[in-house]
Length: 471
Ligand code: NAD
View 1: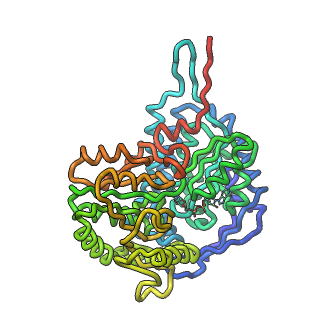
View 2: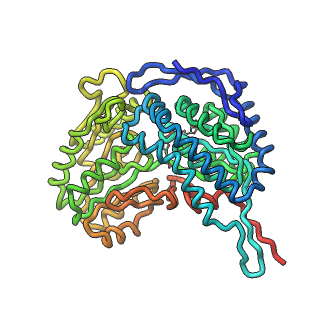
View 3: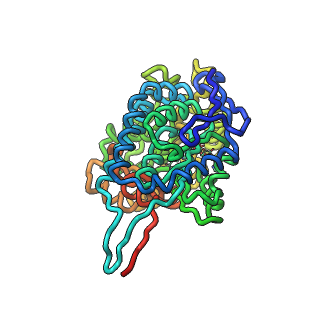
């Protein structure tokens, strides 16, 4: 049993004013593995005050000093990779391949931002004006349980590169992972108050940060409904917001696709992180002309996925993070059947032999049309919908017929053809043929998948105010 009874404020691990104890679980066994003592609004205010005190000195640091700091943070996180991986498997249950990527990715986010900063100019002359980009002030960074390390490190790296100070509110369900990360970050020798971490409930600590007058900006990753409530709260004091929200990504298999490669990508991106990923490609748009072959290959590939605890390296689908998430996924599978969709593979209930742990069947529905709720709503589990189309215009129309627009996928043997289709998609990112992550490219959503972009220079600019001096 782990007890996490400290928050990190002003460069120190301190006992929070909040007293509520929140249980932490291993999702692969359903065992209670720890408790976190949650901070409250008073703790949030103390963290904002520390960040506000640190801002004048930190905002005047040079580019070289910030780059050096980002390198120290990278080294500190990279040195703890093994501990981070172990914590993520225990508390979150993600499969090993994903966890290995996540820990390395989290550390590298500091290097990526250092690279962006090296090439970034904070001053330019436009006509008769000198235009300077100023750090905004105190940034509140609110993160979800499904991307704890990446979300915290990415937001921290960007805010620090811009010269802002930060209060981080991680998901209350990720407290063990956050503690390991906080210890690593503490070792990097960041001046007190420059970053602070307060565990707590969203509607308590998160809400306080979203409305606090001394917070200049909120950067949030999480669900669209919570993003909406943050935006409403932020409007009162005109806070800047970056919102990274949900998705229902289309994956268009073009008729010319090499199906062996395409189906492998469809499965990899559809069931990414056991399906608990905002960027998952969960609507598979398949040409009617090749439907029988696509379904046959997809069924075989999904049936071969190994479900189980992430302690087994062969496992590709881990448990859902919580009972609530398990119930949600079961509810959607039930709903899909009720809406008239047909099961190609998977279905309700637990996989054979997995009686403990929040495991679900990787599931693929056919006979889906884009008006069904299973095709419109973010399920956040390993559930795919296959939707037929007759021609390219119809494929694009279905892909864009969604309130979301985070990450779309196109599969084709002809790159130029895939690009032409990609250019028609209303999506912050389009990935062709499973292309690797591009860490300096902007990331974020069209429509209700969010506002603004993270990563690289677009992410950095979103933490800066523009001042023009004339004459
Ligand atoms: P969530 O919206 O429930 O919670 C996210 C964070 O917001 C948590 O820290 C939570 O405590 C906090 N929160 C809750 N209510 C709040 C409030 N009223 N005010 C301020 N903060 C509040 O999301 P989740 O269940 O943790 O994560 C899953 C969701 O996140 C999915 O919808 C997924 O698509 C989305 N997501 C998006 C991205 C992206 O980059 N676009 C990445 C990962 C996850």
